[in-house]
Length: 155
Image (cartoon, rainbow, N blue to C red):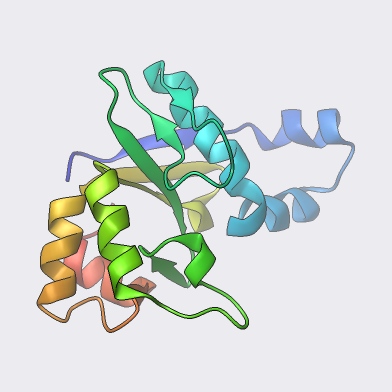
């Protein structure tokens, strides 16, 4: 892991640009399904990376040097398995999860509940793999916010 960094937005400018209330903006920016599109792009811009060629790729960004990274939102939970393994009628596949870890360098974890100043940190795939095999990530690699902070510390 590296030191905490931040993605920041100006709520007042967003209110003007989007013509929405502060409450609506906070609700949008603290929903991982919605804001992940923006956090991925902010990280790409900040580090001169490249977005993955498709939403179906097993990673979100390619950083200078060619290393692939996944961007995840920390809310009440965070998961490390492929997105296609999360949700209704979907199931965890250990082989697919481990293949993902082999493909990427690691994860950018964004604590979106702290919007408008979202702290983020990086966690290597090796660290995730170690926590998975120690049993600390449970059987599906989905952990609660509390477990995340117990394992990786506070931002």
